[in-house]
View (spheres, each protein chain N blue to C red):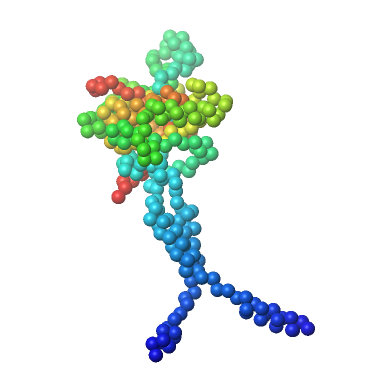
Length: 175
Length: 150
């Protein structure tokens, strides 16, 4: 009885067997593939520098400033001031022309890095942010080179410098 | 004679493996397609910095406003030129409306991703940064490449 049933089922399957025509589906799949291949444009891998930039205004650590001002023996006029000023001017081609940290002239980016590390990495100076005064003709490439140096600087707490602001120098001011 | 030959030559190839392969390719392209690239103006030449490294976006970087600035200071968003002031203002207003805890004048949580051409003079770039700051944006991502393209 059981054998009979099995035979019957097999016959039924053979009768109902269908062959799907995959050609149309393949056509559609190839069209989709062509679309994706033609529109595929890999995005360039870009780096980025993350900055916190509130509107630029130099700030003074009031407590430190008062303490420094009350000390008659204090000969450091910068004590209490927690903003370091960097000045960068551009030449006619838009490249970096001159650089200053405070009023000290800086020869190149390597010197700038060591100077900034000395001033910002020292917990005694109290600097925690930077204002970059930028000549109006300096191009973005030159500015980013300076910003790149600044973001490499390690602060006394071990973090990298990220608080900086930009101020535009009036055109024609060559320091 | 010819009828019998054509009958002998007829073959039905099994299309299932090729269909499988095509679907796998489609799946691959669907997965790697990046709609963010549409927002980028790929004509811009970004500044080249050796230390610029791609950073994985964190949870705080979900709201990023991408601004493309060409060397003449023109703002482009999704391939369309935009007026800087009104565009930034409208984007700031959108974010103020979406977050009821924010009051006008409060710093916004959104980040500005600045893709500026390397030849953009600072005077033009500063106009963009100032406009963003005046509208409450304080977090910035300055985009750069770590090597020259091409």
